[in-house]
Length: 286
Image 1 (cartoon, rainbow, N blue to C red):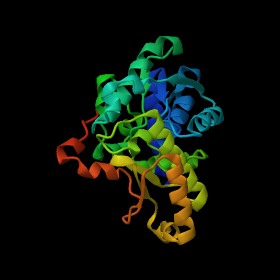
Image 2 (tube, rainbow, N blue to C red; image 1 turned 180 degrees about the vertical axis):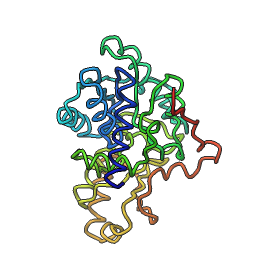
Image 3 (cartoon, helix red, strand yellow; image 1 turned 135 degrees about the horizontal axis):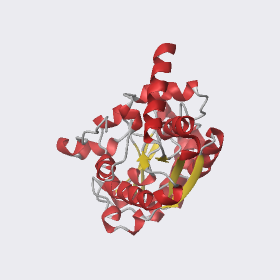
């Protein structure tokens, strides 16, 4: 964006949030929700609160990062212990698993709104999210959750631009969907499996010095590793290959495979029928 475009986008976003009068931001510490939280603090001050959901599906370090970011922004911060792992529909891991997770989050947020002294829930969905498999958007509609980034007409690139201009350290942070999203549809989600995935990804990040990668858990405890294409030769080298296999076996994986297509977001969605990829439309004015 040009300076003028950035100033206009910033003004639109802050004005939209100001019209909310009070808001609870579903705050994951990703770049999108961080920009919303920053704008909410600028627009509403103490009438804004950032709320982070904590459960086994949250990767190690993400809760601490959320706390640090909220302190940096100067916004109130609350943590909710969500109970999606008590829901059989979530554990069975259907293609709309995210719907049950977001329903749990938004239902809890609704119950806590009086205590937080706010009236509206907002998420970090941006324009690009409308073209992806996002069952959580249905839950957002059902709970009347607002999407200020969409209302302001902001794409992911716009959001990163604003975050960088505001000096937010997550401006270039890779997407960090929940750990359950690494488990192939139909393979049950369990706390043990998400912990195993978290440990495996942490091991690979330290080994390779790469921020963006995935360990997908397929049927029969098969680990499918996705890394940027330029990293493939490193993983195939004998010394690193042996170290990875040994570590993954220790973590409980029965098979360890390297995906030759490399890292790509949402690769598990490839098996879904096209109609399931359609995202419900999101109203941009109320």
